[in-house]
Amino acid sequence: MYKLRRDSNYIIRTRDTACIPDDITNSDYVEYLNWVSQGNTPLPADPIQNPAIAAIDAQLAEIDRKSIRPAREGDAVFLATLTAQAVELRTARSLLPKIVQ
Image 1: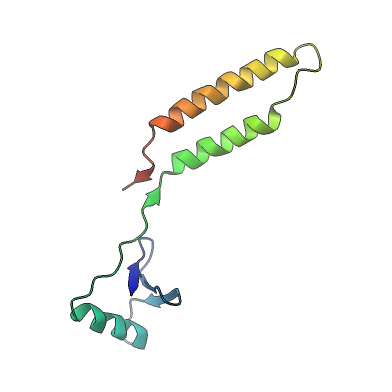
Image 2 (image 1 turned 90 degrees about the vertical axis):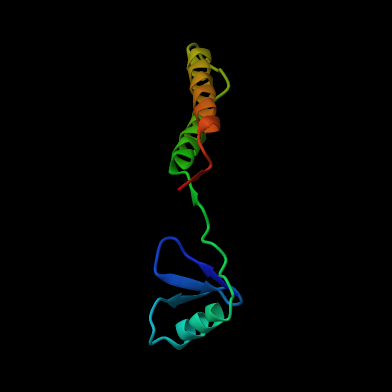
């Protein structure tokens, strides 16, 4: 069985995850073409994950890293600001599509 790749001109052979180039001189590619000519269909390429979600997740991780228990004067205000930012980011993230075309 085979799987398409969205980001290149390669086909993935699923049994060993070999990347087969789109090259008629490659025996593995010829084998793939024969497989398709017999009525087989490769698995579709993986969907592209929304990069905006990864960016928001990175911002949330940074907020988590900065979050501290209030220990000094002003820490409570700083923590409340970080918490508010995290809420806004989580809301924005929930509105994004998980996959982009």
